[in-house]
Amino acid sequence: MDEKLLVEQLKQGDESAFKTIVDTWQQMVYNTALGIVQNAEDAEDVAQEVFVKVYESIGAFKGDSRLSTWIYRITVTKALDLLRRKKTKKRFGNIQSLFGGEKNEIADKPDFHHPGVTLDNKEKAAVLFKAMNQLPENQRIAFTLHKVEGLSYQEISDVMKTTVPAVESLMHRAKSNLRKWLEKYYEKH
Amino acid sequence: MKTDKDIQKLVEETLGSLDGLQKAEPNPFLFTRVMARLQQDENNAWEKITSFITRPAVVVAMIILFIVINALVIVQASGNDSAPLSDEPVLMAGNDYGLTVSSLYDLNEAQNDLAQK
Image 1 (tube, one colour):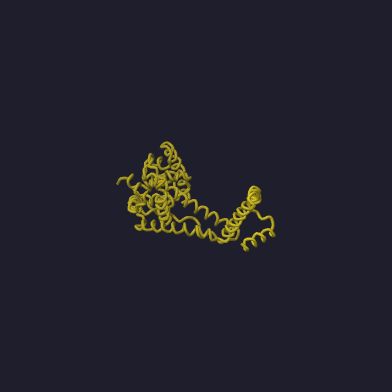
Image 2 (cartoon, chains in turn blue, orange):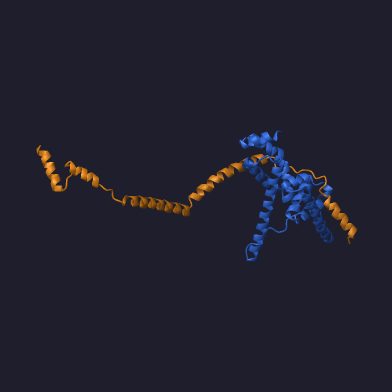
């Protein structure tokens, strides 16, 4: 598949080129979103938003990075946007309930069970995803791209527009924070 | 009661629990849904524009703007008309050739002369 040709065709509004792009990258987009938002329905929404954005913004794609890198960036951005919207909604709901409004229905998130986890790892993976929720954004993104998507540090640095040493640092801090959280968790449970 | 060793083992196993993770499958109708969303966005854009310009406050603002612009044009135009055109040279030329009518009485006289002829 000639990426440059595909991009040119999509810039002309070629629907079959767009279908090729969606077919080629939908699994990548969906899985990345799923790893970040930890909810199948939300991940599907994010995937749709990503491809809508790809279609509408292809004119802005300069070709200075790979198309997949550009799509990864949009996916990460859209997934984080959704998480932020949900956090704001939850916060607003909490404030409302303080002033006698409706009780906040959005309680703690239920455990997330990734459909691709092996059976014997299901419980531990659910705990790990819970721990990942606590990470600062950049650490969470780096860890998710590495562990869920299997990207190399070089690929992650391209997506996050940073350096490989910066990604190494993020991963080191992410693992350190996860360990601390998991130790506390297993002391209680 | 878990020992530190037990806890560390659990922590390491948990950190490794995503090893061998299989890819989840997206909705097979994703492309169809994306196209539907693009179509919806296009319709929404027009809806947003029309719903904005039909809002009462916008309509009133546009009417006021229309009136103000027209008023400015009228005021500007009447300002240009205030300086009277000097017709003295024309009158003087008319006098030289006996073409001017200095009063209505003269005009009537001139008309009667023409009628008699």
